[in-house]
Image (cartoon, rainbow, N blue to C red; front, side):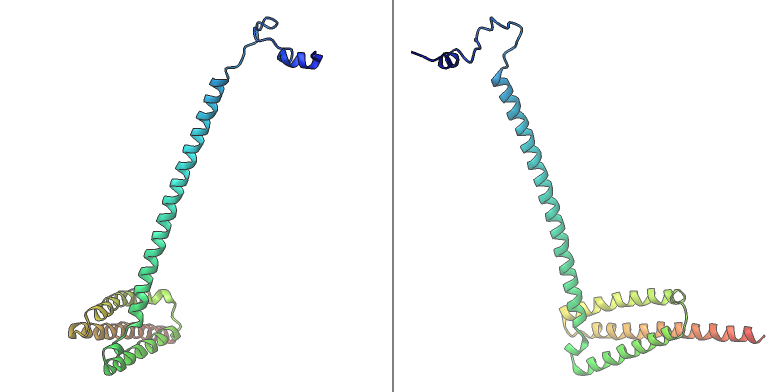
Amino acid sequence: MKSKFEEFLDAGCGMQDDHSRFPDIEVPDDEKIWKGISAELGKTRRLRTGLLSAAAVILLMISSGVAVTLIINQRKAVTLNYSMQNVSKQLGEEENFFRLTVTQKMEEVKKSGVNSDDYSEMMQQLEQIDSQYATYMNDLQVLGNQPKILKGIIRCYEMKIRVIEKTLNEIAKNKHNENENHIL
């Protein structure tokens, strides 16, 4: 003998499948609903996969850029650490003399009290000379002791000294002219 509760459950919780009691109610199509849900999940997965792919590409580009920058900086550091001292002691001493002379002349320019804008042309010329110097140093390191390379390096130092001396002469002329104008 069944209890009323068991009969209720067997009867489908009081619902009948033939919809005779509520003819206007639609029965949802479970299969269609689950297909829609799985389609939406597929879109989300494709979107997530696309975003991860884009992130991976961006990360790869950034890491490549960093690697290239490090390689370039390492080459510059190697070039700066290499000097004519590596070729011979005499050339190293000569290079040290030129470096000291350039440093002293630059200190004179700075101590002159002239605005840095007034000698910006000099700085541009020195940058060009430094670029050529770096090329010679790289060639010296790669090709070794070549007379043309060594002459080019010495010429770079001489050109730097000439450019700085020219600027110092112009500064002196300008100061002299300013003094004469104040006297008159």
